[in-house]
Length: 130
Image (tube, rainbow, N blue to C red):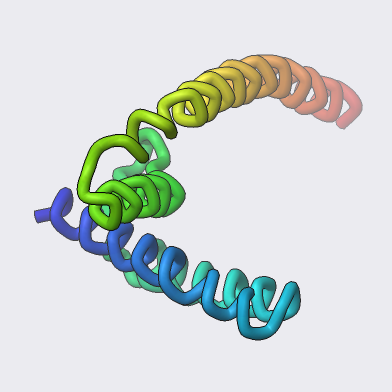
């Protein structure tokens, strides 16, 4: 059931982003785009994370709405075209995004490993000073 909740929560976010954000941006310019982005992401974050529609187990990998929004946007174009051509055209972008995610993950782990010894050293120094 938790997987279904996650799929529904991210699908709703993707549908709103793909249908409402562009309409607001086209109708009201950059201000409409910012307003739509703020409203859509705020409301969907509240529903998915605070209310708990999405399943994010403690200690597990953080799966955010961006994945669902990306899948929804990619598949929307596939359904609108009635072929897999848009999916094939998006593969280079998907690969670059995956590489960026891997780079970000490696960087985060490196930072975390570096921060932990610094925090322990500060704690030891404060205990010695006491």
